[in-house]
Amino acid sequence: MKHSVVLTFLLMIIMNYEIVAQEKQTINWITFEQLDDSLSTKPKKVLINFYADWCSYCKKMDRVSFTKPEIIQKINEEYYAVKMNAESTDTIAFDGATFTNKNSLTERNAIHEIPTLLASRKNTAFSLPAIIFLDEKFKVRKRYFEYMSPKKLQSAL
Image (tube, rainbow, N blue to C red):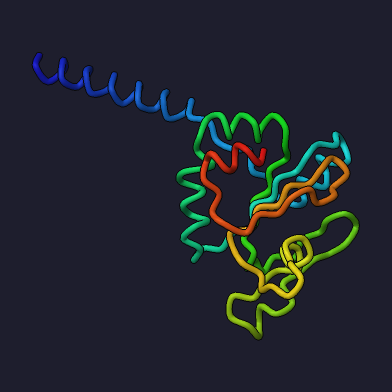
C-alpha cells in the first residue's frame, strides 16, 4: 500500500513537470528556406541571429535574453526569427539564389556567404554574436555585433 501511494505521488509530480515544461514558450526559429516561403506568403519584419558553436556570448544570449517571455512573445508576434550558424557548410537556397560556405574546405571557422552578405562591416572583421533586424521589405534596419542583454534586446525590438 505504501508503495502504491508513493508511486502515485511520484507519477503526479512527473506529469505536472511535463505539463509545465511543455507550456514553456520558445522562439519560433526558422531557416532561410522557410523564411523565403514565409516572406512570399506574408511580409513581416525579420530578426536574424548569427551564431557559432564556440561563441560564449551567443550561448549566453540563448540562455538569458532569448528565454524572457516578453522577448519571446514580441519576436514570435512581430518577426520571422532566423537562427543560423555562421560557419554552416550547408548550401542554402534563398530568394532565387544559392549560397554556400566557399572557404569551408580551406579555412578554419570559415564564414558562410549569407552572414558575410548581411553582417559585414566596412574595414571591420566579421564578429559574433551578430543580430540583424530587417524591415518587411528585407532591408537592413539595424545590426548589432555584441551581447545583447534582455533590456537592450527588448529596446531594439
